[in-house]
Image (cartoon, rainbow, N blue to C red; front, side, top):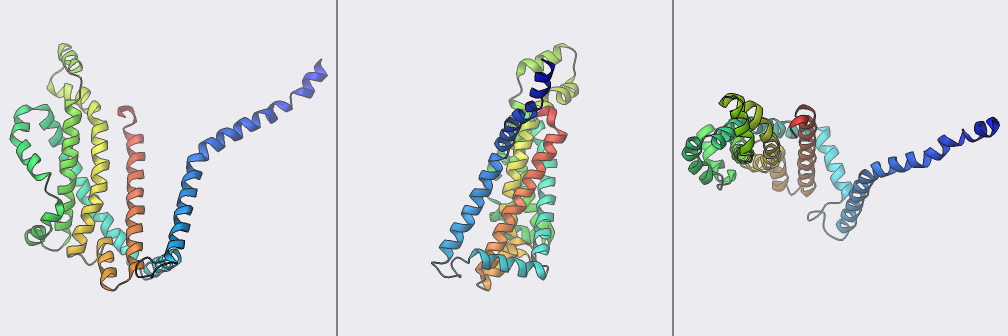
Length: 272
C-alpha cells in the first residue's frame, strides 16, 4: 500500500499542470485578442495603402520611417512634451476647481441656483469657439491653451460631481445627522466617499476632451505640440507626419488614462 501511494504521488503535480496552464491561457486571452486585432489592423492598413496614393494614405512602413525621422531630430519628443504639459496643467486645474464647485453646488441649493445658469449656458459652447478670444485676452503663449483645457475640464467634472452628491441616499444623511454628525462631518464621511466614483468618471471623460481641445488650440497658435505638428505636416503635404501625430495622440491618451486608472485604484480603492 505504501509503495502504491509513493508511486502515485508524483503524478499529482502533473495532473495539476493542465489546469494551471488553462488558467494562464484564459487570463492571457484578452491580451492575445488585442494583439491579433492590432496586427490585423496594421496588415489591412498596409494592403489598402498599396491601392492608393501615399498622399491619401501612407503605408505602415512609410509612417514608421516618418516617425523615426521625427524622433531623430527631436521634433516628436518636443511635441509630445509640449502637449502633455498643457493637458496636465489645464486638466489638473479643472479637476481642482470642478470637484469642490460640484460638491457645493450639489450640497447647497443656493449655490446651485446662483451658478447653474452659467454652468448650463457655457457647457454647450465648445472650447474652439473661444480660441480667438483666448489668444486676444491671454496672448499666444501657454496660458491661453491651458485656459482652454481648463474650460473643457471644469464643466465636465463639476456636473459629474453634482450628480454624485445628489445620488447619495438621503437615509444615510439622516442617519448621520441623527447620530450627531455636523455638516462638515457628514460631508467628509458620507458625501465625499459616495461621490468619488462620479469624480473619477468625470476626470477620465475630461481627460479625453482635453486632447480634443489641445489639438484645436495648438493648430491656431502654437509652434510646438502635436496639434502644431499635424498642421505643419498639412502645410507641407506630409501625410505620413499627420499619421504620426494622430497615432502619438492616441498612444499618449491611452497612457494617461491607464495611469489615471491605476492611480485611482491604488489611492481610492476603498471608495470605488
